[in-house]
Length: 199
Image (cartoon, rainbow, N blue to C red):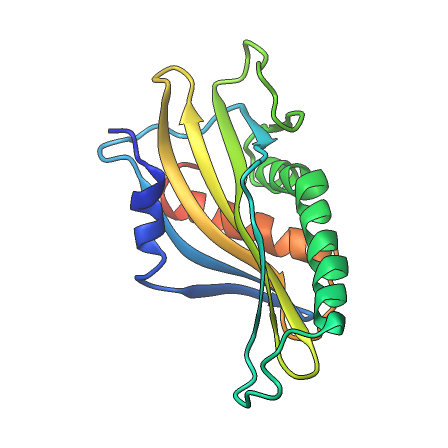
């Protein structure tokens, strides 16, 4: 069975589990699913960022009063600066953070180039990190910024995705975008892979 993106997104409405709240930084697990009857352990994975050319950046206001509900130029500037910084951080270093956490867990992982079209023959699994949404939510004073990431594990022998997870990564309202977000995201991915008995 090859899982599809809609089946994963359906999980997001089920249980929302907050996994890490470290110094104002957080990752939320929206859901994960393993292919039925799959009983192999991940070995020698390559971790890759997969770009999304159709990714839209959204901004919304949470203020209840109509006079405060208008998106201001300050909100737009905040979102442009901080949501952009979050996307750059994740796309440039998210995969190496996941690789490092896997290596620390005893799984020999390598970091692949973003959007790699080929992998070494020794690579048995590919873990892809794909941005599914990005947005800012602003109050009258501050904004929070989040990126939704879909993570898939592909068994290259079977040529099938055997696991998928959905994560929301971001800093709470008015908190800065820091590298601790990478630790929270990578820890969450490894934790979900362990729960699925894949590592």
